[in-house]
Length: 123
Image 1 (cartoon, rainbow, N blue to C red):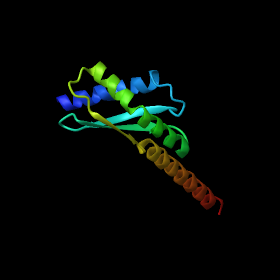
Image 2 (cartoon, rainbow, N blue to C red; image 1 turned 120 degrees about the vertical axis):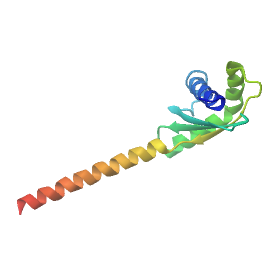
Image 3 (cartoon, rainbow, N blue to C red; image 1 turned 180 degrees about the horizontal axis):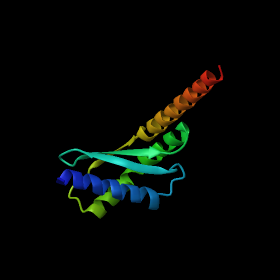
Image 4 (cartoon, rainbow, N blue to C red; image 1 turned 90 degrees about the vertical axis):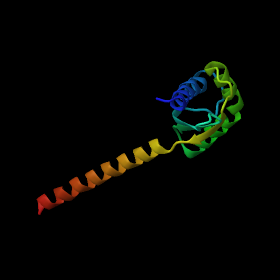
């Protein structure tokens, strides 16, 4: 694992800890840091977060993260002892929602298939 990956993992862990333990913004519901993409020069970190709840809650949570960006960046800089702290960009990670949607679709298709087979047996 190279330096970029190590720093990205450290940013992911620390950001998750900061969001859960240090921020008191009521807009921030249940947020999980899913992954961090860090540029090779360590200048920009894209932090992908999953937020549980409605679209409105997700929007509010992202607004809360955006307003706390400077605070999070300062804490990351202190804790990770980086010479230059990367610029933080928070992105909503919709992969969990997509996975749930796919699972529900598969389950619905299974149920429809069972109903179809049951109808065939009766005739």
